[in-house]
Length: 599
Image (cartoon, rainbow, N blue to C red; front, side, top):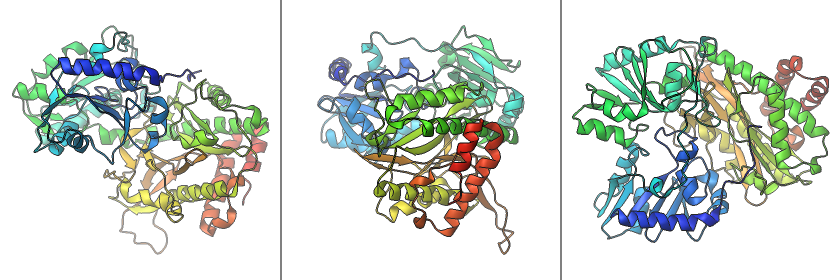
């Protein structure tokens, strides 16, 4: 099993650790300290040694931060985690703060109104853009941010060692483009911009650029480190020493100990390209103190990595069909089971076994979410031995899962039923399905961003005075991060959607203490074919679905669907049968035909 069910959250330890941190803050002559979830690479997952927020507070979500002051300690969490944080952190010691609605700068300004205060932060764990935004909000106050050593590390006596995993190849048969070609193309961009080099700090950008993968982190196959790409296409890669090397790096890629990274920065010729949104604040500090010119611009690997090439798209399609077959085998097992004898852990275990039976699964792409009944309303619920719930009649079960395969990364959510469910649940389920169908069918002009499309998936819920507190879609990597930037479908994303980008399509609805619903397919942006009567000179885009697993039509109120929605659903299910039939066992094939019957 890749997934374990041990409980890692212990609210009882938080107050004592907070007091120790406050003593360290006072000894440093500060009035507060910011503890982020992020590490120096700003990825979703962090190594055990970098799990500072979880160690301090007990909160294990994948995003957020804590600001510890003398008399306040706010945990900033977004809509996905507002139920979870109350269960994992001591609510007398820590106060949840709704973020991003409340930003750290205004919060500090409010809590420290009229006071002179110094708030410490570790410059390796925050980006330049992040710090500038807080400082702008604090302008005109007596509150100042101060870069300092990490105070959590000073009090964390049994802090785990940093990862030092192996480096492996991502072969050309899966990568599609050689590292040399990628580096040459990005180097040409540096030359055109008059930049001598670029510092790349995102682990998945480095993995994509060098065609390498690793096992430094759970669920995301990356090697942690920092890279400097020069305008001649050469790369200096700074990472942990003594790694096992199962990759073939060419002569223009040199490995260096990560401890030499800061010193190497001082030797660079400017201008140096640096991404204000991803690079650690410390990198810009070092360059500025050395008098080296910085050109602020996006990580040059961000967009090429997001726009999958034909080989990567071919791999993604195969990975999704393989994964879909495993899902259908699981759903066949589930339907034949005594559901009320099953637990959430039983579902997670059985699903991982079905994926493992493909003999291609390298890891799960994130901790499987299996939330029954009220647990389904916890958007990123992780079942443990302590919280494991037995399925009960009338439950809806949110099952959100995915796999890491050499040819692609998958992510799928289906909502399962246990016996008969109520009419209210069916109405909400149908609205969520309508939202997913609407986004699947949309055509949109080139140049549109995720924020332009986000309301489309929400409209059926909006019409019922309902909504959900997470984005409609996130980017997905190619045997990389299941939550890949910069593409998103949410109310804030200004990144243009481009052909080859893979995203999730996952509207939901959650009623705290009662039930949750989410449906998710992965989709890829492609150029749209102009229909008869359309403007042939107008460049339009659309989404092509990658995921082919039936949705449970027994929960759908068919009369709520329009004729076009019903036609889309029936056609989708017909394609599920067509694509999956050769891959299934006899029992699963029978189940598939029944599940995909037209409505």
